Length: 510
Ligand SMILES: Cc1cc2nc3c(=O)[nH]c(=O)nc-3n(C[C@H](O)[C@H](O)[C@H](O)COP(=O)(O)OP(=O)(O)OC[C@H]3O[C@@H](n4cnc5c(N)ncnc54)[C@H](O)[C@@H]3O)c2cc1C
Ligand SMILES: Cc1cc2nc3c(=O)[nH]c(=O)nc-3n(C[C@H](O)[C@H](O)[C@H](O)COP(=O)(O)O)c2cc1C
Image 1 (cartoon, protein in one colour):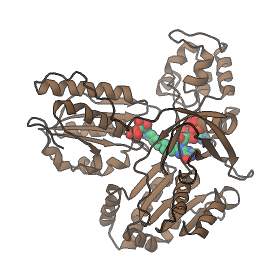
Image 2 (cartoon, rainbow, N blue to C red; image 1 turned 90 degrees about the horizontal axis):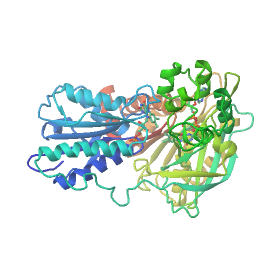
Image 3 (cartoon, rainbow, N blue to C red; image 1 turned 90 degrees about the vertical axis):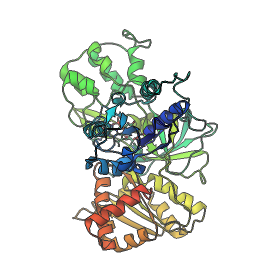
């Protein structure tokens, strides 16, 4: 937070997967030629009172969960939301990252922008809401803000207003890798299908760390492409205005044809849960020209890496639940999960580093809560701790439906217990008895001991389902701290907030 006599600036970000951080860093680099030395920091590191002592506040924030602030911004938002301190002397701009296929598009950015205005701060430029790919819109927004700051300072605009990313910070290049293992983890009788994959990194130059994710660029299901073409009454070679490639290629490789976009729903009416693009085309009787411009680019899907590079330097392991469900008399299949399961041989991937989801020093205890595919990064952590003979204790909470069919990596987990990499394993199989038992129940049963681990400095990691699990686990963690630590609800809230702020409570949830 330093600057010239005229400008003192805070540049801050709220991020889940690093996009907002990247955009904020690019912004901070871009104002350096103006003599403004601003380092991009997490919103949680910003005290609301500081906003009264600086002249400019630049925030890049993504939206997460169901319209929520990402974890790295929740504490800041909690403080700002209830603040009534006037900010008349503050100029600000908000870049909101999001995805319009979610109901609460860019909600966190919208809330932040509105609150700053309400407190009397002045916009430098209007909020920009980014739908999906953020690099270009972030550059344009940065250039707009820099232009105004330059004019404010009466300086001449720097020749290159937007700095290139610093070395070592570029997003990883895409790489075409061989998928060398595709193995069913769940038993054939399970009502789920979860698979273990291994991606060969040889020749890629990719080096990863336990805690990172891998982005998988899939192509669409040829059966679904064929059904859409039939419904539209055209062949795969059909050419459409403004596109170099024929419709078959666009539908197979370029466009999202599973999850209906907002624009398509504006034309065809709202999609019910699980309905795909074909369901909407059929219902509204749409033609190619009605549909094509509403479709979004086909995005990659992220998967938490399930291996440690110390044990598997040349391979990345993944743990993926195949999305398959019936609807309208046909199978509906998730784009990337069933591409991997049914068709992939070579796959385009790129690494998604997750700097916040890292093991602490080897002697620090860790608590891992990862039911279902949430087990993935913890398998990586345990491989790493075993390989390094780390002294720190490790406690894993795992759960799924049934032990007989869904105990993912069960034998390996028993092996980690034997080797001492895992100190405690608590299992919750929800359907093995009449009453449903989930990981949060196991946490609650062990409140005192869990709290004693926290008091010893343990880190808490949560991975897996964001909709229900992560919320229930969060509520239970507060309860555990209150009960185990003998605190009232307010004190427990502050305690957990301190864990978030010091990166001792981190989540990789989706
Ligand atoms: C950081 C991160 C890490 C992740 N790690 C993992 C991981 O380790 N393992 C893993 O399996 N996934 C993981 N995911 C989720 C993964 O990225 C994909 O979202 C998931 O595999 C589905 O992608 P898809 O392309 O197969 O399905 P899509 O084509 O994207 O379809 C998914 C959509 O189908 C619909 N749907 C799904 N099931 C049903 C149903 N039963 N009934 C009706 N509709 C339904 C829902 O609308 C859902 O949004 C992670 C996500 C993130 C962001
Ligand atoms: C689990 C999850 C939930 C999301 N929820 C929303 C949402 O409610 N609204 C929205 O606009 N975008 C949502 N997004 C999209 C992200 O905001 C978008 O991908 C953004 O670029 C991520 O930036 P980040 O890497 O800085 O977190 C969600 C993404 C994920 C993975």
